[in-house]
Length: 72
Image (cartoon, rainbow, N blue to C red; front, side):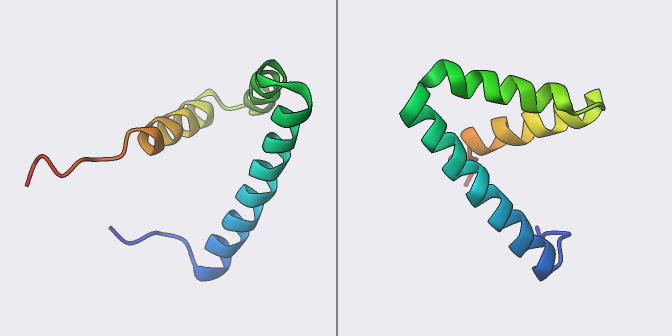
């Protein structure tokens, strides 16, 4: 399935994801898992739209459970 993003949007999304991942890795390294969980909670609570929170949570779940080749 082709992505609905333009190349520029994909590049910006990738750059943002890399910054967030690096910040979260540093937070984990310096302050532990509880600090990472608190950061995730704060990020989630900063989103005013519950549907958006749910769609992001679903995307994270989808990414953590990639499809398998069993159906082939």
